[in-house]
Amino acid sequence: MEWFIAKIFAKYNYWVFILLMMIGFYGIVAKDNLIKKIIGLNIFQTAIFLFFISLGAVKSGTAPIVDEEIIRKGYVYANPLPHVLILTAIVVSVATTAVALSLVIRMHQEYGTIEESEIIEKSSDKGTTWT
Amino acid sequence: MKSLRAIALILIFLLCGLFIYVAEDIPVFGDPEAPPIKSVKLFTMEVDQVVSLLDQHIIPEKLSRELVKRGFPPPSHIEKIPGIDGEWNAFIAKEEPHYAKEEKYYWIKKEGDSVRVSRYAFVVRWIEKGLEETAVTNMVTYGLADYRGYDTLGETTVIFTAGVSVILLLRRRSRL
Amino acid sequence: MKEERRERNVVVETVARVMIPFVQLFALYVIIHGTGGPGGGFQGGVVFASAFILYTVAFNLAGVKKRFPESANTIFSSLGLYLYAGIGLLAIIFSLGVGQYLNYGFIPFTSHFEENRALGMDFVEMGIGITVMAIIVSIFFDLAQKDEKGSEEEEGEESR
Image (tube, rainbow over all chains, first blue to last red; front, top):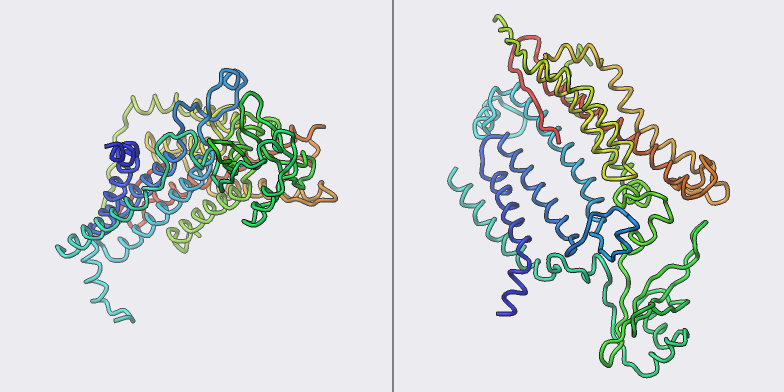
């Protein structure tokens, strides 16, 4: 019973974020519409950010801003290193979403549809150089 | 597209199993003594005469030999933590322009009848000495723009490149 | 194919006209107070860009393009990056014997080493804020453009 509680119930945050990651992953692989795939990618990235930030939580820790009174009273600070790394990763996610959306606009101007199966049929009809 | 959904579900179960197997070693949610925030355990030694040598601020030979054997720099200076019995800080020598020439690196603790040697994590220097080194009170800002300044330079290049790619894809010949 | 005119909404237009200057002022506050409390360059840049998006949602796209033309946009987006790399180059020039790239302590703004680092960080955060604002506004204008032939209008991009 001790082993059960220590290994499974004490780490409940990781199981929740893994569930969110799998929801996003299902959206990328098994949906036909291109916009739904992009939304699945965003959900996946958000779940990874939350997973990484929850690694840096400390029990009864305050926000990482240095203050004289807090040091005197003896409080503990939360870990500021994951926050710094995730700020960079959020900006990379915004850049990826912007380029993906502009690619979807060009595909719509070229083929007239956004469903993946219809695009595969039309592109094999048009006679490209690949077979 | 029924086969695609079945393949997706099988892949999801395999990936879930892999993640749950990996998450056994990750520290418990909110642990204040976990490796990312405080220290990483290196090895343990027997007590012998190490404790009495450490109390007189002399570096034992056995400690330096064990550390060099594993590839870590040997300590140059030992101090006792005030107020707690049985714990010591060890410093190493560093070459940095304009700052103090030594850095707090090892944590030696006596528990029971063995001595545990561990190495401090990197964020201990951020939290304790950030205000006197940079005169800024926000830990995330001086970590992003001063200690990790190269990462932020590459970051700004990434978002600039994304803006240029969207311009190249979406503007017609007459407006470019 | 005749275009339909959008009907004007008085409540949305009046509220947007009042709110836009205060949103921009708050964005400048977030950028400049990055060293004293929560905030910084990336956050303030995105809030600044959201003021232009509010204008587009309440009014039309042609009005914004008159006030913030594309030539000014391309100048701003590379100005921030020049500022960042330029401060690094100044640090190499002023640190004579050692020659370190982004060590702001050697640039002689004031007389203490630590306060020079804080002022160097302020300049760097302002550069990041300018670049992020210009790029997000440019991406939004490109995605919301209507073609001249009158084909689909794709609007909007989620901004964080």
